[in-house]
Length: 142
Image 1 (spheres, rainbow, N blue to C red):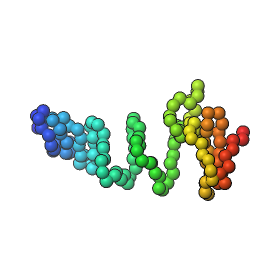
Image 2 (cartoon, helix red, strand yellow; image 1 turned 180 degrees about the vertical axis):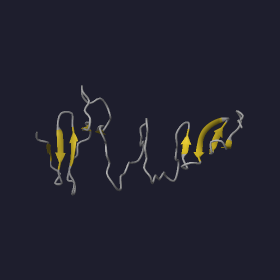
Image 3 (cartoon, rainbow, N blue to C red; image 1 turned 120 degrees about the horizontal axis):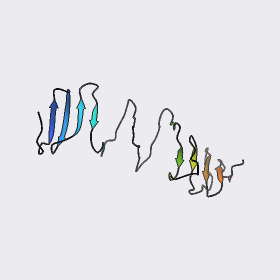
Image 4 (tube, helix red, strand yellow; image 1 turned 90 degrees about the vertical axis):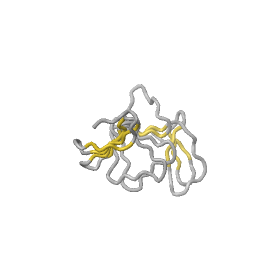
């Protein structure tokens, strides 16, 4: 059974056992009977309130995961960057030959003052620096 260009709503596809979401005659998503999968055919998923909880893993294929406001927090397990780079700061060209499996620190605001029970590393335009718990900032030695 087809849909008209004016149809907006749900349509049950008996042959393929899924429930289609249709807007102005265009299928934009579907709920699949096997595996209880939700497929969004256009424009992705926007969550405007209440958050999104994923309990069985999150995989992006062919696209990036972008956090535009707020933080990305890992509360259990590890954060892995496999065979790519971890950029701290703007992701831009880094070297004539781009590395892999590198931590790249772009120039940013330098730390100053005492920090409690922590240490860190940062970069300016020419030097990799470290800061230790007493607030001492110094160059990282080769």
